[in-house]
Each structure stands twice: as C-alpha cells, then as structure tokens.
Length: 208
Image 1 (cartoon, rainbow, N blue to C red):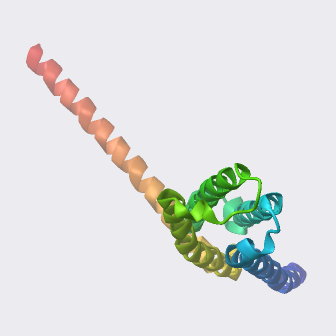
Image 2 (cartoon, rainbow, N blue to C red):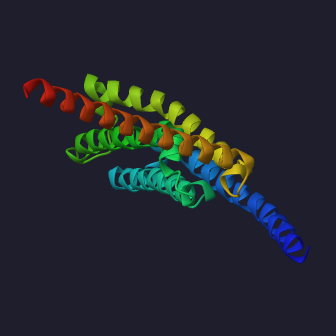
C-alpha cells in the first residue's frame, strides 16, 4: 500500500510538472515565430543601413537555429526517447525538422544575395530585388515561411502530449508491437536459415 501511495504521489507530481513544460515549449516557439514574422515583414523598414540589415539577418538566423535546437532537445528529453523509441519520435517530427532546416538554408541564401548586392553600393539601395533570381528566391522564402510556422507550431503542440513524458498504455502498446515485430523477424530469420540448411543437405545428398 505504501509503495502504491508513493507511486501515485510521483505520478501526481509528474502530471503537475508537465504543464510547465507545455507552457515553456509553446511560449518559446510562439516567441521565436513572432520574431521571425516581424523580421520577414519589417526588415526593409527596420534596417537603417546595410550593416543594420546584417544584424537583423543574424538575429533571424539565430532564432531559427534556436527553434530547431529547442525542438531536438525537447524530443531527446521525452520519456519515449529515453525508453529507446527515438527512431519513432524522429519519424513523427521529421517533417518539422526537415522544413525548418530547409527554411534556414533558404533564409541564408536570400540574405547572402541581398547583402552582396547592397555591400557593393555605398548607400542603402532597394535595387537588389530588380534581379530576377533574387526576387524569385525572396518570394519562395517568404512563401515557405508559412510552412515553417505551421511545422514548428504543429511540433510544439504534439510535444505537449502527456504520453511523451510518462509511462502510459500508449507507450506499452508501442513496446509490445516492437517486441512482436522483433520476435517475428527472429522467427523468420530462423526459418530461413533452417530452410537454407535443409536445401544444402539435399544438394549434398544429390551430389553424393
């Protein structure tokens, strides 16, 4: 009875700690998304000169890197990952991770093209968008940002599921499926090895 009471108290303490993780994760992701939205919207108005725009672009890239790092850290610190099901989590959140990495690469390319054009001039110019390749990548980056916001917010809400942070029937079912799959694979390998050895024996008998 005492051990059951201790387990119940521990589960209650864990359940009270989980919402704090929810709020931290959601607030940080929402804050980083808002910063990126503001930079994408007002970077041409906030930058007083080329060096100012360089600083703004660095802030944007740092926010994206922090967002990706936060997502990976939260995935690695879940109970599911510590239980040995990291591959399952990576499959579940690979969309958000791939989209975020691709968006970071797009931002870096667009920022580099814009800064190269503007550093060649002594004054802050807007003619960088007159080049079709710069304008095309700029439009693609701004359009792809919507998918990035969706992916990161989706990952944040999915990581807010309590099943990721404590033992549950859902996790036990996953372990059972994994154990059955491993057992089936082992039985299949043994049967394949047995049939191969039988075939070799038959061929040897025929040769003799």
